[in-house]
Image (cartoon, rainbow, N blue to C red):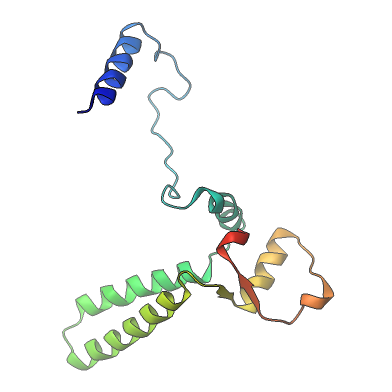
Length: 138
């Protein structure tokens, strides 16, 4: 343990001995841990809005599908089925890999659903065109 860790631990013990942690709001209740701790801070608000609106980003759906395919692969003994699943996993892996670090193509149906859920209106010049979401824009 570093000197700083030791100092922090000692201050916490001293405060606890003085009763400074008694009767805090939520005492005894489980902590509500958000699942976005690994998400960059600048993306958290946008992700929470989409989540609260009941929308799942296409990349998340793809990752869920990938996990399902890998589970199916682990469960099957049929060689032909294993080859088919490996091919689908590889194709999905390549698709996801190509989207990382680049502009992400947002399917028109997903974009329309986002606009409807958020009550947004679009400008006429953007309607019907393909759209890209850049990480910096979130």
